[in-house]
Image 1: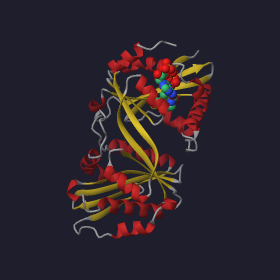
Image 2: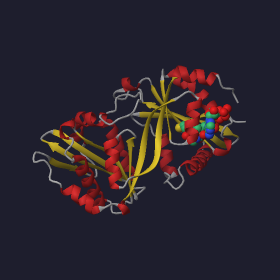
Image 3: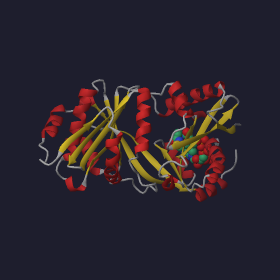
Image 4: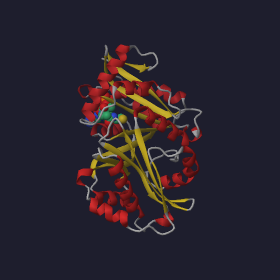
Amino acid sequence: MFDTRVFDPQSAPRAEWDALHHFRRQRLDEDTPGEPIYPDADFEADVRRAWPMWENRRLMAWRGTTILGNAGHSFRRPGSPGYEDHATYLNLWGGVLTPFRRHGIATALLRATLPFIDAMGKTTISLGTFLPSGHAFATALGFEEKHRSIENRLDLATLDWDMIAAWHATPLPPSLDWERHAPRAPLDRLEPLYPQLTELLRAAPIGALDTPPPRYEISATRTWYEEMDRHGGSHHLLLLMHGSTVAGICEASHDARFPDRVFQALTAVAPAWQGKGLAKTLKAAMLTTIRTARPEARWIITSNANSNAPMLSINQRLGFRLHRQDSTWQTTRAALGQALDTRACP
Ligand SMILES: CC(C)(COP(=O)(O)OP(=O)(O)OC[C@H]1O[C@@H](n2cnc3c(N)ncnc32)[C@H](O)[C@@H]1OP(=O)(O)O)[C@@H](O)C(=O)NCCC(=O)NCCS
């Protein structure tokens, strides 16, 4: 037997935090063995913080003083900029310790989440997973797989630096200039660029996902930079500019707590400049930058839609290899209610 309760980070006693740390470490060992784990103090600070753009709530399944499973729901903070676009969307996440699976714990946690979903008027429910058990659960609860992305990793020890030098040496069209920013880009420089960068971001495929239109948001960048100021880290932004127009972008970041890895974010070339090898130039420039700025980095980690053939092909040539596939599943509030109604309460 177990009972489900909301975990309130502001009032949780120390014993509940300790139980949560124990649980999350067990879960991470099960799902992502060998991957770095945030220190407890950072995790607690993150969970307690009122994030300006997003809000997370957590329900736990308890047996006595032990947590067996959790289910969180995250959503755009009401009143944050652009909230209207996000008003009906909610993301679910969570997990159950392996020995306690197939006992209806996740189903019970979802059922306990419904009143929150309804109170907020959420109608499109998303869930991300990369594990077979997650796919099976989502299928059983009537979710549909809407998007799959591939997390690829490049071991820098295997990189062909001669090829990178050749890509980097390819002459640029004469009207293009580099603009480089690190370890931060000035927010007053980014803000006027964001409408253009948003256009480039939206060209990246996202399958059949029903989602608010993705956009670069200065308030999100401000929060991210404040976070990096706290724990250390850097944002590397490379732009190819045609006057005041962005022809191409490549951005990456690192987190000082995990110095062996760099996260490659968007690489994109504006339609007018595609077909000229600029994506390879951008990638090569970024890898060269990282080699100098972050000599301790071993891995470059990136995610691309499985339908993004051009980027996957460039990454393949660089030596990126499949690490895992992440799927986003979606359902509606109405369909979720029906699926839960057909399942027995444990
Ligand atoms: C997905 C997960 C949370 C399910 O937890 P759970 O408590 O075992 O789920 P339930 O017992 O409520 O399962 C409900 C139904 O889902 C289906 N299901 C769940 N896990 C399954 C599996 N491994 N294989 C096949 N079907 C499965 C079954 O139909 C099950 O009903 P049944 O046992 O009566 O046949 C758990 O497996 C887990 O933690 N996985 C790793 C994390 C993850 O992928 N989370 C996804 C959400 S972010």
